[in-house]
Image (cartoon, rainbow, N blue to C red; front, side, top):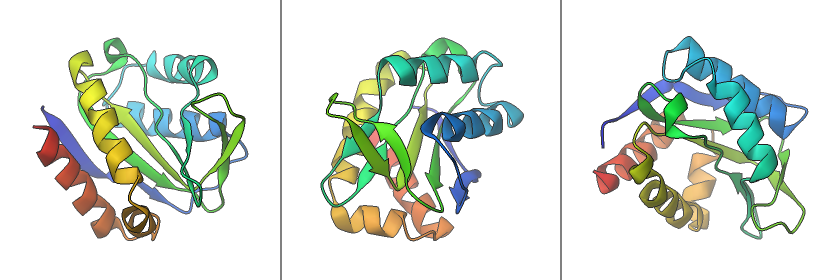
Length: 153
């Protein structure tokens, strides 16, 4: 899998009023850096509305937003550790989830999406890893993302 980990896509302490605002922010950053096409933002928001990505792990919440490969120029992952939790709708339809970590998946090859989602679910099931990812340390976050990419190549 040809996937770039870009420190410029690791955001610490951003404030958002809603899940959609956080997704629009991420989409704008991805467009600005040419990872995605101009169609990406609308597709990302539409997909989130139809298929929410919030995951409740009990002690913490995570979101894994993504969109279709046709909107992607090159594959990457992005992480947001918001200043305060952002409310997402739960992936399983059980209501709202307060999310303290948002990991956006941007994949050019559709067949890589399921393995990447599976790897992220495993990573986010590890409370210690999520604590470290949520710490706001960019080098620690990058290390985890690089390990994730290595495991999926």
